[in-house]
Image (tube, rainbow over all chains, first blue to last red; front, top):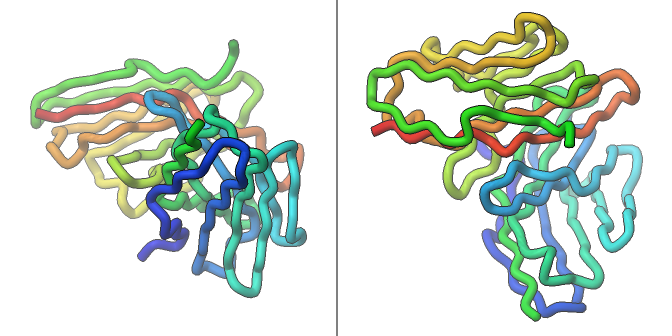
Length: 112
Length: 116
């Protein structure tokens, strides 16, 4: 029973173009959503987050969009750079910072 | 750099042996989490502490697993009578809960366990 789904295991994008990574969740109790990036042999690194009271949060090249009615969020990276190549995990938690659930990840490859 | 550290980084053991991992969180962080990650999957929650109190344990955490955070600082995760299915990356994360309702977790590099 996957509560957080990332249906695209991999994604390839040309350098300078937009990368869009998608995430769907099933538990309506989730109140806070995060994106993490992971390089090989390292732990996940926090990228950006959004609470359920917002529908958009932006930080530099990274923007996260939340559609609560569809239980869907997406991460946009513009412009994509080769250094963005990594595995991206979507995660969700409840209002108290408990019950963190991670998706299976999407491997992004940004081609020069 | 005062990020989250984990030791050892790699552990190879024989089935049936006990292993212990250590996590040192970011010093001012009051919450500490343990996760397990297998190939092709995201981190899977095991347990977490707020200060020295263990507040939640996953149903996936069998009786062979035990975690402690005796002084509210570093934590240890012990696996007794290891099985081949325990082979995974064990990740530790810490966060500062209370400054705001929502809190980001900062991860360590992980301990890769291989059970032969």
